[in-house]
Image (cartoon, rainbow, N blue to C red):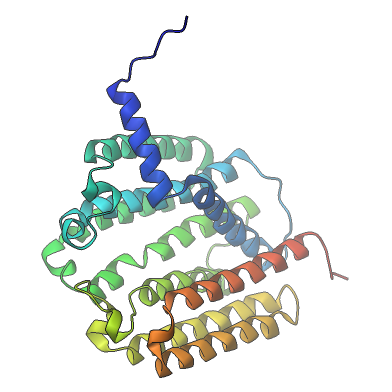
Length: 312
């Protein structure tokens, strides 16, 4: 006859955290995204300098895990930062609804960040840029100690918070340079730094652009500046991204710019359609598809180049 296991407070915490992660940060897809971003930057750094495949090491595994852990840390930090606002605007989210407790998330943060810091110190060795990443993330978690100014200004929040992607990219680029034994400050690395920053920038803007009839009490860029200005900013930013990606891609295959600019052309068409009739669809959906399409295309080119396909 079996004996029922007592339901302890720690067991209940694990259950709550499981539900939180399933809802707010699906672990498997986000871990895959972290490693995809890591290896895309890593091999792009090598290939654009004339190098190829390097065997995967435990340092690579830790660095890829660090991206996922950092993104999860930011997710939890945002839930803490926006708690009071979410109680009013998004009461059904996991934390304001009570499905997960602040203590649960604090425990998860302590365990996750401790593992990440120790693993980086032991296996990665990229201490300066890892420290910069930690410092930037810490400052973000506290509104750069200017909450009374930044929280009330959506553009100021964008300017201060969104560049974290640049810091994250720099962490990977510097690590890749140390692995390949190549200089950090090259024009290729500068392009890589920014071409993998713009997608996050435009996604952040696009998800806060709505048709007039869809606006709520939630502050959006379209409410502040109208629909036209944010769409133009998105198209300009992605044009710069497409140009940079084309320059980098040209070093892999000569026809890469044709494919990249073709995808950008589709985004321009979508932007025009949205301006003409914004109530037809949410802008963030086609922008997300563009980002996944362009980034996916670059990953395919990288894999093909690493495999030696089309290389004489």
